[in-house]
Picture 1 (cartoon, rainbow, N blue to C red):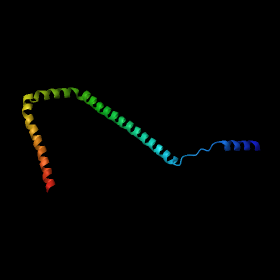
Picture 2 (cartoon, one colour):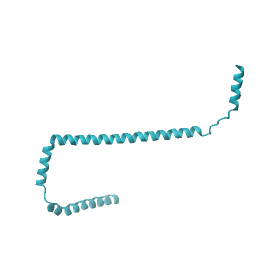
Picture 3 (cartoon, rainbow, N blue to C red):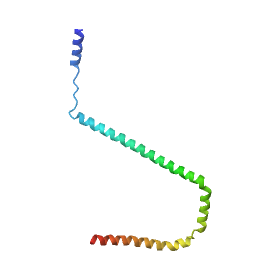
Length: 119
């Protein structure tokens, strides 16, 4: 028994010493932190994709249900709206007026901001 103990001690003494670098714990913690961040990003990406798929499926399901329940009524309403809608000539006549009103609105906001900033 004594000879095996001496043999083990001799084998252990002949093995080279492994020394860790002085900043081993800092680098190890940095790698662990980076790995944790990568896992969290992957998890967030999966959850975002799952949320998008769920949202699209819910909206699609609602649209299918509405079309199935009220399809005939929606088609008749669409035909009524097409018959009562104004002609293209009427829309083109009012288009420049609507553009001018929008531009005047933007110009009014700009002038009001200028007046407020000067006072």
